[in-house]
Image 1 (cartoon, rainbow, N blue to C red):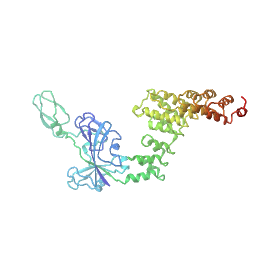
Image 2 (tube, one colour; image 1 turned 135 degrees about the vertical axis):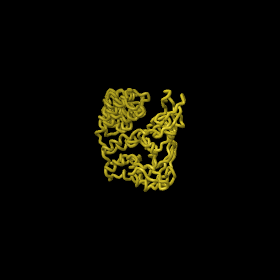
Image 3 (cartoon, rainbow, N blue to C red; image 1 turned 90 degrees about the vertical axis):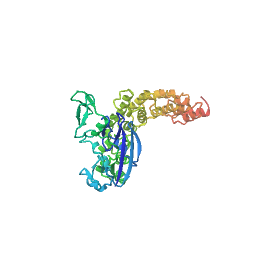
Image 4 (cartoon, helix red, strand yellow; image 1 turned 180 degrees about the vertical axis):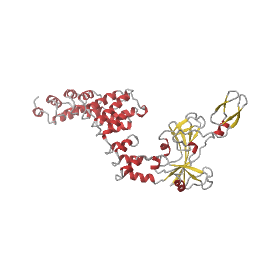
Length: 461
């Protein structure tokens, strides 16, 4: 076990004043302007959750953070600097504080949230008590001093007894308002400074957890516990483990860093895919869109999400589903062998609505479920490869094949010549094509009229 010393500071998002983060709290009131700075649900995981934690300057959510990290054998007392033995801190977890063996001052000890404990961080030591929330309330400013201080009204000179509960006080003599100067205000509300606090950590736990998460003999309840791990590699292994409970996999599908592993897991319940698709998370849409075993209802829900997004009727976070995501989803639908005919036609229509259109024509033209009317439209493409794929598709209508048999590109005519469902007259014409490859393909076709072949070899019309 080791102690990781943390010193973290940033600026208030409202006024830009220094904001020391001396405790693992979800939000913090600025000591200068009192504005509440919400740090976000994943703030601490993103800042301190990495395996190789080190000092750095971090830009996150438009905010610059300065992080200083030092690894020590034991936490240190904030007052005298003496070591506080880790064993003593662990033993005092239930008490909530531990006494410094040097000066006797008590340092706070606290069990962090579950994911930290699961990940091998059993205890927080030495946090600032003034920054800790009480019963989940917003963390506020330090409490005002209990003893009032005399202050002269700047308007009439009357003596006011102020206690720091308000920055602006009303004079009982002249009814004027007096603004407490910084010096007096800070008597009641000392400006916090950045100071170290400690994360206890076992550096071997992460490696052990990765092995356990990959083991297909690990009990489901243990995999559920590890699914909350800070380490992405552990969560990926849980998401891919066939023994992971279905409910756990369903939750992991909402985590973009491991969603792909969860959705590919054979234990993942396919019956919830339409529900997942309707939620509109882009990484989920992309994965399901390309899954060969995706149910048609899920694929239809995905197409509806894309249609809503392109119609500017998207009601979610547009930044979470941008045009690049739309392109990935449409490509997945175009190439997915499970996509039904109506979805393929919708992909073509939706792609036409985009400013930056994707190149899905060949994938759609080759698709076994491509509808005949879509193939007829693709047959007019300016891309030779698309027209060649249409010519080879068994679902292409005869009238379209007749038109492609006269295509200017020899590779397209050759693809037509290889079909066994052509009219004899068309094959006969292709057997006399100016291009050698087209002629050979037609004459090698089992449906080629044999009598015509005889005449072409030995004379006659």
